[in-house]
Image 1 (tube, rainbow, N blue to C red):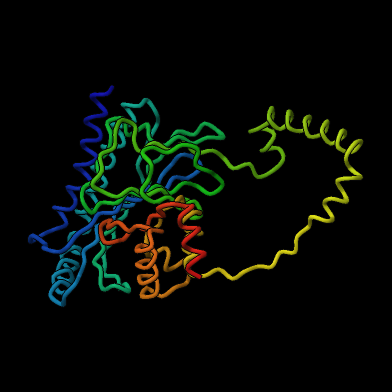
Image 2 (image 1 turned 90 degrees about the vertical axis):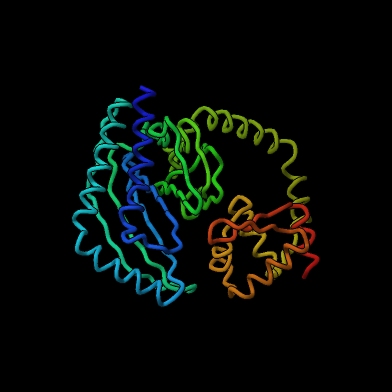
Length: 332
């Protein structure tokens, strides 16, 4: 079985990146990056989106890519057939190797030029739906068993796993470079070599109602309820009257203070596990790009954060919660 899976995922890497050479007709000489997004749904299916992005820095770059688009439209059906054939073969082999039912469907491809704040970008997107990609064992979803032979990201590659709403991450390995719980995404940057059954993600339904809580945490809830009830009886009999007066004296008057810019950045980084792309800080804190860049430079000099280059993005890392608190509040 392991031999079969080695073939399967050697084929996976070959299939995904073979398309780059197929797309790059006439030796398309442009700065290129690959993004693979796997969006998992609650039934275990996943939409795979493979994006090839080309930085169009000059007018000549734009003209070269426009010529490619003309040829792409003429050969679009050929590109789509090559992609669908490769992905169907990959999924079939994975199904045979794991003993689970899997199918590939809803293939698509499109290309165009996007205008971004940093310039023009040529984009080619391939996508399909992998039915049976993850293992569903209600209330859990396990992602990763299909990667028994591992996985590899090259330089400037990016892998993002997006999990379904209403689920929380219980385990993930290796730890992602960026984790955004509010967007339900886990992201790894290349170059990176994943081991057997990696990336591995274990999800569990979030407890939303009393029945969900009792089902997931029944024994603990019962024990806690007994302890709280018994403690409350003792508390009521021996301490209630005295403690009531103490509480009335201890209630503070809370005066909210406005956060300074560094406070906002530190708080955002803490909610995101200590790491965030610089572009996300711009978006979530509402700062301009220039203000964010200067602010992060000051925080970096103060030892509050560090910045790492990841492809075309900068990853901001909170260095020390204790130090950041001290510096942040003293910075005013």
